[in-house]
Length: 316
Ligand SMILES: C[S@@+](CC[C@H](N)C(=O)[O-])C[C@H]1O[C@@H](n2cnc3c(N)ncnc32)[C@H](O)[C@@H]1O
Image 1: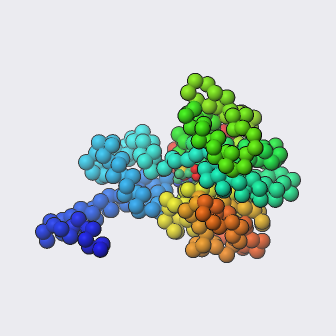
Image 2 (image 1 turned 120 degrees about the horizontal axis):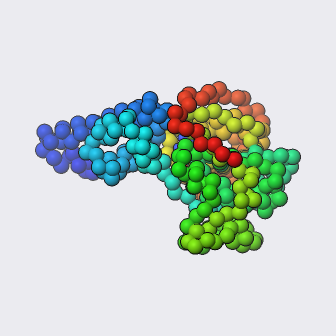
Image 3 (image 1 turned 45 degrees about the vertical axis):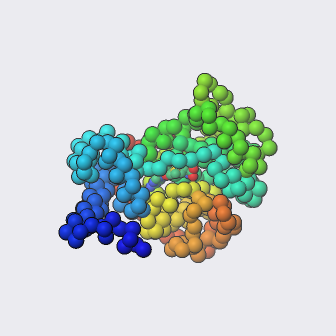
């Protein structure tokens, strides 16, 4: 079956060999490009899923007007603006408020009451994209009466995404979907209580923003946070190889207090990873992947590998 689907198999022998060589050169170009990015900008994409890199780099090459990735690499080494553009291809920015409402319903009904037993709270939304997830989390904490005693960290490697996340402004035509998700997650008020409309945009309440700290942080190269009670890292690990997934889960495990919670995306799991035994599954079904850190998880040594040379983007 695989041979039938391989375009090389329908070419004459010499051409088939060349097609195979082209594919190998393509793979090599991607590896060299990721190495160049790492050496020049200290952003580490070397352990991202090969399928994602192939797809996204082919798009970037075509849309940015290069014939080969090695030409793109030449430009990128000399022009930080080229890297800034390429970063938009390397990072996938798809999100929604209260995405997978069943997940937020479990957080609302089961996790918030447990969190309320701690006198102060730290929550980390890792890979926050344009902010949909962290603004949803702030609303959830507010409705549980916990926001005032919580510090919410929202991190990403994409500075443009972080800037948008910090602004808390979204196109108005997304409001209906956000509201539907909010209600499906068990929200009893109206989402519009938390935003004001201005022309074609909605802007979330700055009172929610006061508790959120936005920061540049990479799961691929950076170190742990400390004493967290909940980590929500959804739809980020699917873009990583298993080795990088293990590094990230190790970070979460060492950042969480005993009994702290970890929420993953609907297509992500701890089951086959190196740290599975450090967590107990709380809810593992369809859209909800929620785990709790076991008390006896021994610390795991994860040291930061590099500091990126692009300016850190920190704001409060
Ligand atoms: C598909 S979005 C997920 C957004 C949100 N968590 C959700 O589930 O709706 C993936 C995000 O992960 C970020 N990301 C990619 N690599 C990362 C890394 N090494 N460290 C932190 N964030 C990363 C991307 O920039 C992007 O904002």
